[in-house]
Every structure is written in structure tokens, then in C-alpha cells.
Length: 256
Ligand code: NAP
Image (cartoon, rainbow, N blue to C red; front, side, top):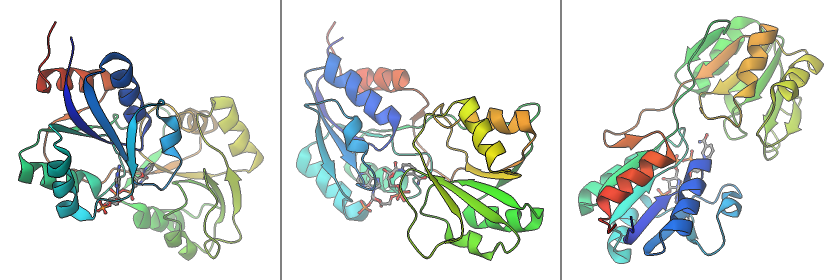
């Protein structure tokens, strides 16, 4: 089915890049613009020839004006499950302009037999839980932006795994392991054993790229403090790129 129309894709995830690839390869009449916050090198994952822009829109009003000026007929919000503001901005801007909006977000992980999770609402709550647990050697796999609350954990030594180095002045005594997923279960077992980790802090990002740490923790009986996702606005939401393609097919008309 051939689709046509201007689509704004709020990117920064594997799913966004995959959707962009499918549209650019199969739907030449879809005029796609992929938008990035600009905090990582996610632009590199886009196929050549896909239009993109980088940087904030300037809040809800800025996004509303951009949608009107660029005449987008649909918006797909495929930002990260922990992007706290962009989904609300997209919701309000699309409501104001009457533009159909879809949230594409991968499913959260769920606990299975053998897991020992303590589920908390946010990163500051995770730091409270680390302190309460009395864990001595803690692996932080929450990125590098939200490390400050762990400075209060006086009994723990930290290993921080992140894609980019943390800013100086935050947990300066921690060991930093710079790495980008996907990781294998063997990689994760080696990391946990070599650093004698007795507690992991993770965000419930879902997906497969960083899922191996859950299996490694299960096998080694290491507990996890799991930060659950922030609230999201009401609206249409799908979990897979294939479902997003089907939604776009309905919105962008189409000819067999
Ligand atoms: P956020 O709290 O939802 O966004 C903060 C601000 O960044 C937004 O208000 C918007 O600025 C700008 N922004 C976010 N996503 C954008 C996009 N795709 N295009 C243009 N501007 C965007 O999100 P965040 O936690 O800062 O994350 C920023 C980006 O990194 C997101 O795209 C997200 O998908 C990605 N990311 C986040 C995490 C995480 O754990 N938080 C992990 C991996 C990737 P204006 O208000 O000026 O428009």
C-alpha cells in the first residue's frame, strides 16, 4: 500500500530509527522528518537521505508552531520510555493543532521467577533503596544524567556503566565502565562477578539491548532496584514498529 503525507517522528530510540528505515525504503511519498533532542549520537542510526532536525522546539508552543509551519499530517512520538516531558508536549501540541498522534514505546520488562526486584518510582527513590539495602558494591545502569541522588549512599561503592562519561564532581570515587549495548548474558555475568556486584540499579527501559543484565542477575541471585517508567499522557499507543506502520497506513490513506 502506498502512503503519502508529511510525518514528524520524534526520535532518539532504536524503534524510531527502524520506523524511519522502513518508511524511507518502502514509502517514497511519505515526507518524513526525524527530530532528535541532540543529547547523543542517535542521528547516526538513521539511513542516508532521511531528513532530520536536532534540538528542542521551545516547549509546547514551539512544537505547535513547528507542526503548523511544516504542515505535518501526523506525529509519531518514539522518544525513550523515560523521556518525561516530550510525550506531554507532543500530546498538547497535537491536541492544539488537531494532528493525529501516536506514541510508539516498547513494552516494559516484567519480573519472572528467580528475579528479586524492588520497584521504585524514580531515581531519588532508588538511591533511598540502595542506602536502605546496605549493599556494598552497586552497579548503576541508569545513564549518566541522574547520578546526584546516590551521593547520599555512604555505605556503597559504585560502578557506573554508561555510554558517555559522567560529569566530574558526581560520584568521583566510582569506577566508570563506558559501554554501549547490546550486551550478552556472558558479558553481564563477567561484569557482575569481576566487580563483586551485590545490587543493580536499572531503569525499566524494556527492549533487548540491555535485557541480558536481568538474566545475569537472575543466575547470580543479584537483586535489582528497578525504576519504573514516568507517567505518560492518554492517547493512542503501540508497542512495535509494525503496529506503528499499520497506524500510519490508516492515517495516510493509501492506494493498493
Ligand atoms: P524529555 O525530558 O522528555 O525532554 C526534555 C526536552 O528535550 C523536551 O522538552 C524537548 O525540548 C527536548 N526533546 C526531547 N526529545 C526531543 C526530540 N526527539 N526532538 C526534539 N526535542 C526533544 O527527554 P529526556 O529525558 O531529556 O531525553 C532526551 C532525549 O533522549 C529523548 O529524545 C529521549 O528519547 C532520549 N533518551 C532518553 C533517555 C532517558 O533515560 N531519559 C534514554 C535514552 C534516550 P523542548 O521543550 O525545547 O521542545
